[in-house]
Amino acid sequence: MRHSDPDERWLGAVVHVAFFLLLGSSFVRFLTRDAGGARTGWVVALFAVFCLLYVLGRFLAPAPPSGSPPTRRHLVWLGSVSAVWVVLLALAPSATWCAMPLLFAGLHALPPRIAVPVAAVLTALVVASQVRVAEGALNPNMVIAPPAVAAVATAVMVHLQRQGARQRVLIEDLVHTRHNLAVTERRAGVLAERQRLAAEIHDTVAQGLSSQRMLLQAAGRVWPTDPDAAREHVHRAAEITSRSLAEARRFVHDLAPADLADDTLPGALAVLADRESGPGLTVQFRLDGEPGRLPERVEAALLRIAQGALANVREHAAATRAALTLTCLDDQISLDVADNGRGFEAEPSRAVPHGPAPDNARGHGLPAMRIRAAQAGGTLTVESTPGEGTVVSAAIPLAPLASAPLFPSTTPKEPVP
Image (cartoon, one colour):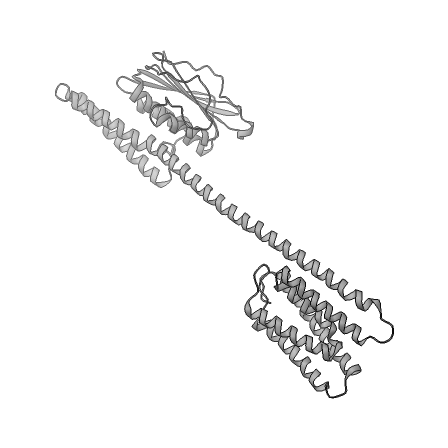
């Protein structure tokens, strides 16, 4: 029997050894007790044919794997070897106990609705053979023992078959579930990566292009009347182009902010504040506490949030002053971006650890900032009132998220006057 299951191979080996032992003992018993007469040659030939058929079936008609239907070749072999055994049993009752391996082969290969009647027929033949050669008073064990042994063997084999069928169904369900889970996780990973790439592009390439367009438009408007101011606008647009190119190259390389390549988070925020300051807008940076060494993902998330918030200030707020405040506590780090611009109607201030941005969020900036804060294990809060400015606050716990506080630091956050 060619099975990949080592347990089935071991069981098959035991059955084969038992068959040859029983066949040898039956043959010896026939030679010592029943030999003699004209039929001796036929019986010896039948023993040889019986043994040869069994051996050939091992190689030419192996039993199907557990749970698979029997092949036509195996059924032909099973019928042939059983027919030879029946004839041999009629001529030499010594071959009675060779029925056990045949019983196993039938129960193993046939479905229960066929295997059980086959086992009953084999058992009846064994009992009839025992009774036929009995001498003296009938021994009850000759009638009771074979059916009892066959019943136990049949019950065990049928139970194992049904148990194996249930296990196969469970395994198929498990494989199907694992496949669906892998597909779902792959799809979720693709969506998350797309979302992250969209946020990266928005905070780097898109913001740079927007700033360049505004500066070039301003240069075009003032060029006839104030060429020096126009040249300054063009010069700043060129600087933004250089930074955007560096960000794009870094983006392609490892998606890390270029400002963090050679600087710490406070240094990168100070450079950002200085870079965003210009005619009409002054940006200040303030550091409260000492941040120490932070995970790269936390530094990148806070810097990107600061970039996105200042881009909103520059494009939408019409503010003259803005402030970046990095607050470092023992268990969390928070970033506040406040401006004195026009503000907007916002929902009541609340932390948003997960989920989509509210319907009144402007453009892609606020949703991207919320996503960044959530991916870093933190929250994002937006406080705004028309005419009184806006405060964007990101709080990221430095301890595991399960033990981090639900809301950010209670440090007062007021719009810049």
